[in-house]
Length: 256
Image (cartoon, rainbow, N blue to C red):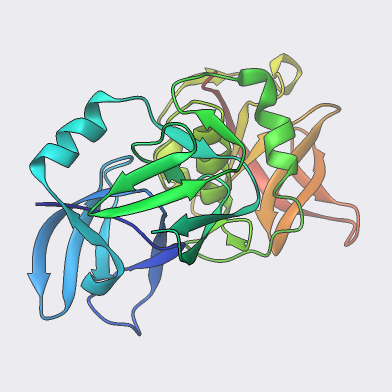
């Protein structure tokens, strides 16, 4: 059984409870597979990255097998405005954040689950790879507040930032930093990096806990307190405000 997220941002929780930790978020247009049900909660798997968790069943809409098949067979579009409005059934407004998928989108309209939406915002085609836009896209998230499990300009974590920026630019990343570190080609030296490469950082136990996007001039955009730009060298991320290194460099990967 499949469903689609028809709300702006839906928390995906570790356990079937509103008090449970949020591990990620569904954005408008995300397709999920329902794995289990517990009272008013669905255990779900996100089809984009295979991430699992629990959601309130009232916050998604079930779709038919035919709609799922049609979704898989067509080109998808993504909203590329920080915030935009879709008009539901010519009457209600539904907010759409940057990086949201627009399923069944054509001629500024989309339709699923018996509802029709009109959308007049900026869009990009999911399958269009835009490697030169990665750093520019990342800058649109600057000063977004850090939020564990967040995936939007209104709250985002480090791997959510990299995943969403890469999604908008036509590339698939897994959800967590430690998972993303398994993707791509390892770059041995900082001098060999190009803008858009990902830098990963570990803790004292050697576990990867942080990721950021390398930009021009030995800078890195990452989410730490907020989405910010700092200096990167062989040791790690140097925070000019605190005059200290905040993260220790572990490895660099190229996925573009």
